[in-house]
Length: 143
Picture (cartoon, rainbow, N blue to C red):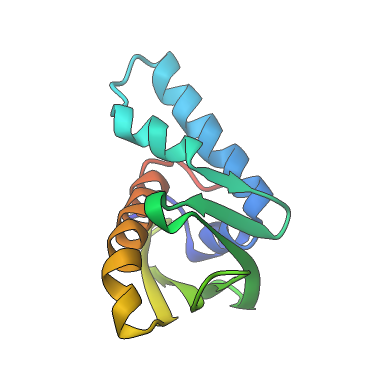
């Protein structure tokens, strides 16, 4: 569950550089308020970098995975396409309204990966995506 309307979440997800600032501000605010921040959350944020139109995730043994902003549908869908990844990958963020000023997000991964690469890539990729999802849920407000 995310604390923002679908439009607010869309506006942040479709602007990676702005999303970086939102994540860092949320972490800083929680620290100032004396909230306990899981060490894993801080470490995961350090493994993700953002530019104006891309997100790069350090995925352990799989190296770094970069995703550039792809097709987007206002307020409902933000897509990132693998950029220089060893296999074709698309991350699709589906945004659904959930009550007033709340949203649900699901991340669909489409990857055309040879069978022999699956064990090597699947685990680190899953961990990285779980870390990203966890960080998104920690944002107190998407406005």
